Image 1 (cartoon, rainbow, N blue to C red):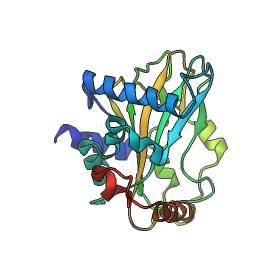
Image 2 (spheres, helix red, strand yellow):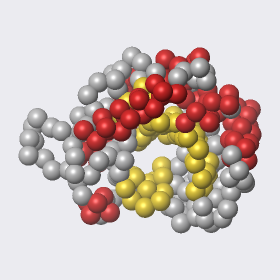
Image 3 (cartoon, one colour):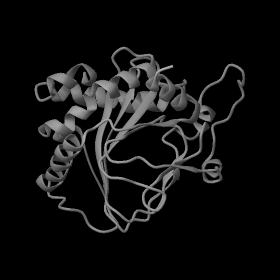
Image 4 (spheres, helix red, strand yellow):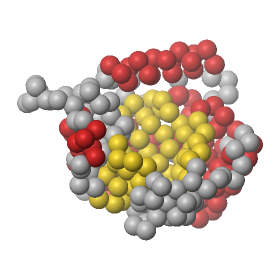
Amino acid sequence: MSEDEELIDTIRRDGIGVMRNVLSADEIDAVRTEFDQAHLDVGIGPGKPGERDKLSGEQLFDYPALCALYSHPRIIELASTMLSEPVPWVWQILTNRYTPEHVGVRKHTDGMLGELAPPFTRQSMAVFLDDVDASSGALTYVPGTHHLHYESEDEPGRLSPTQGDVDNGDYVPATPKAGDVVFRVPEVWHAVIPIHRLRRYVTASYTIRGQLSEKMTERTEKEVERREQAGVESVPERLRQYWV
């Protein structure tokens, strides 16, 4: 079994897996430079202690090294395999920056509480630009909890987990380094411990082009409509097939 096949098995089982050393040191520096410049260009500045900043959508197209991550061949290949979707649709592109000292992120799921979903219709990725570890900014999660959010023929009466369930999970840490990519099934329960050093990452969420949950269908239909009105002229050619 190849390294990537083992990673896919881990993600399917646990909900999170880390692809190591995807970016070289020079590539990390190039993305960091554009990442920081993008935040300056929109007037956010270098960051204020305790705040989370994020940018999204077409404004990121002006930064080629950063934007190229959304159609990076290894990332796309893994997302495509996870979703069984030849051309996955990138429905969200974002940057995230947490400036210390930051309290971290509460325990939560990106699944829809109160609604079960078809299994493995969404896949998130995050390219880390700074190291995190057990003392600062580690991503914590409860392995396997994404499965609790899925419809099941074997358990037709299954109920969606509650926030109380999420709060009481047994969380374990993931500690990516700069240049690593974290692949996360959105429904898995996760959180972030307090942040004492700058924590920057470039992230995206991909979906299948078929049936999603009811709430996700509503959200993606709005985004499809918005993109149709905006047109594709500004979309980088490499990203276009995953954007339309």
